[in-house]
Length: 85
Image (cartoon, rainbow, N blue to C red; front, side, top):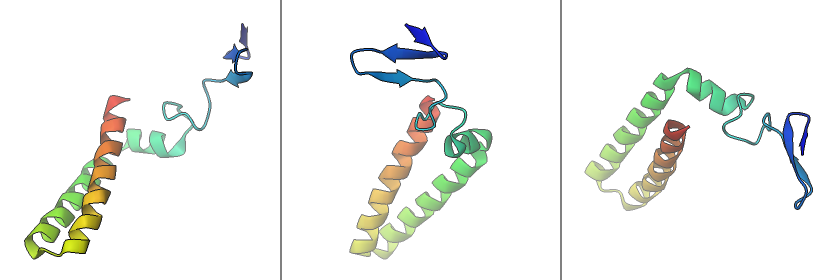
C-alpha cells in the first residue's frame, strides 16, 4: 500500500503525498509557512480589519460596511484556520 512515502488510494486511483503543495499543512506551501513563521503579520491584519470595521460603523456607510464585513469574515475564518493548524 505504501509507495514513495505516500498512500496509494486504489479506489480513487490517486497518490496522496505528504508534500502536496495544495495541502495547507504542508511545510512547502509558501503562504502558510510564511504566516506561521511571522504571527505578527496576523495581528497586524486583525488590527487593520478592526480599524476598518470601526470606521465603517462610525461613518455609517452602508455599502462600505457591507463589503468590509465580508472581508472581515473571510479574514477571521482564515486566522481561525491558521490557529487550528
